[in-house]
Image 1 (cartoon, helix red, strand yellow):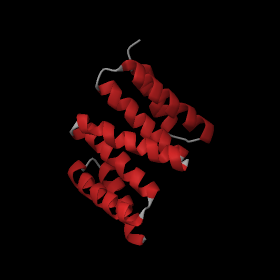
Image 2: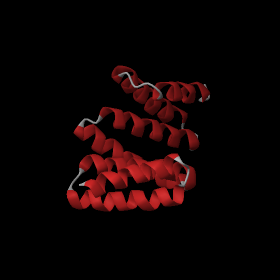
Image 3: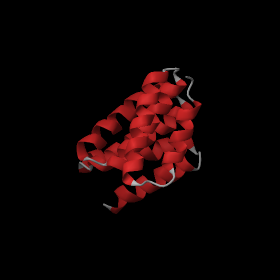
Image 4: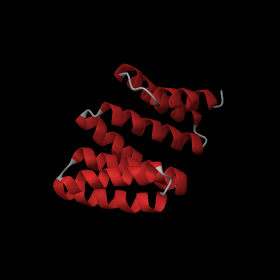
Length: 134
């Protein structure tokens, strides 16, 4: 069980540090371990990280990972993680020039963050919403 969580933290750290190659490798390992253990939260987390990394490196590969994360987090009611996945999907649609779906995903993320009292993420999402073309 410790391997699962340490792998999650390591993958997250690489992603946050912008070390996308290492982050992707560790997130894929997290996905393998979590799938073997049936740890749905960690499976969703791995997919969200893989989606976020793909947004920076190979944008067209991001959508399936983010969609899978959304499905898992919605199913297990992990709302903060769901909002993070929604905001990732909003960024994906922004990159693709799909303004309306981007706005919908970002608005859903913002609603959840505000309801939960999340501190930093709402400001990021508000900024992304404000930067969308009208």
